[in-house]
Amino acid sequence: MKKKALILGITGQDGSFISELLLKKNYIVHGYVRKSATGNLKNIEHLIEKNKLNIHHGDLLDFVSLTNVIKKVKPDEIYNFADQDHVRWSTNMPIYSFEVTGSSTLKILEIIKKESKNSKYFHPFSSNIFGNSKKPIKEHEEFSPLSVYALGKVSSYYTCKMYRDVHKLKIRGAIFFNHESERRPDEYVTRKITKAVARIYHGKQKKLRLGNINIKIDWGYSKDYVEAAYKIMQLKKNDFYVIGSGKKTSILEFVKKCFNYVGLNYKNYIVIDKKLFRKGATRTLVANTSKAKKDFKFKIKTNLDKLIEIMMENDLNLNK
Image (cartoon, rainbow, N blue to C red; front, top):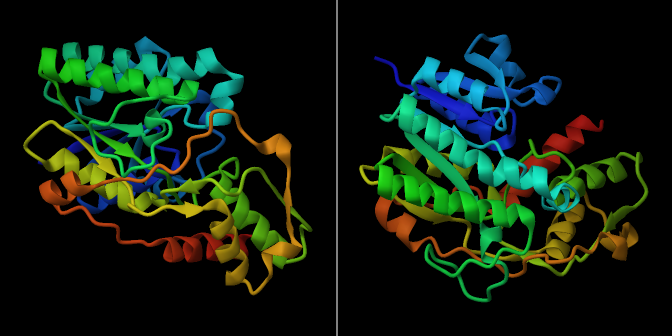
């Protein structure tokens, strides 16, 4: 019998990539889409057109619709890639952001406990929960959230841990470091850069405005990270893992690589705008993935240069 998976946040980069992966593994895939996202299905349109997905409508903040879909599907696996993961938005809408990112986890786990206790549940946490740290980060480093988004992720971490340990639910998770793709919206700095460089190359834009370009970030490719999520769900134990590249690169270096890809000198095009500097920005966070390497042979398949090639080719084609 085919396994059933329910993906919360199926329209985002992680949700759409895990959908493709599970379909290749012969799963029946159900996706949970909030009403306000129904006009933004571009990441999964190719799957919808081929009738490969079962789409359900609702909202993470609506207990009734969440209950209905979990009770109806009774999935073997639930992947929760739905949250408000943009740090700047969490500053502008702190209460809403915490409700979506933190409090919704409690709702979901209560429903699983009552309606579908045999479901395995995967929750992605964020490296933002660690604040600032100069050493490579393992699973049990001290948390120090510097944004409402990170605070919500800390809350969801302890919620998952409690429901796993007290209620014996099959909960697994990963502390994901920054992972990007051609499916990122351009509110995120990597996609902002690749889209701008492509537009500059094609003569559609003159300058690229950025904030602090000296921040160093551990970047990876979303496809590699959702594959890690899948592998974590297949393990016998309920555990949490750090997932990242283990390498840090400055935003400036990322910019240079993107402009080099199209044969342009970045110095002629970037403008530093101090209005774009963000309070409480995390810096120099690097993953130590030794536990994941030991338990399920985790490795990064897509290095930064390959990631930039994927994103640049996508945006160059879009801007022809």
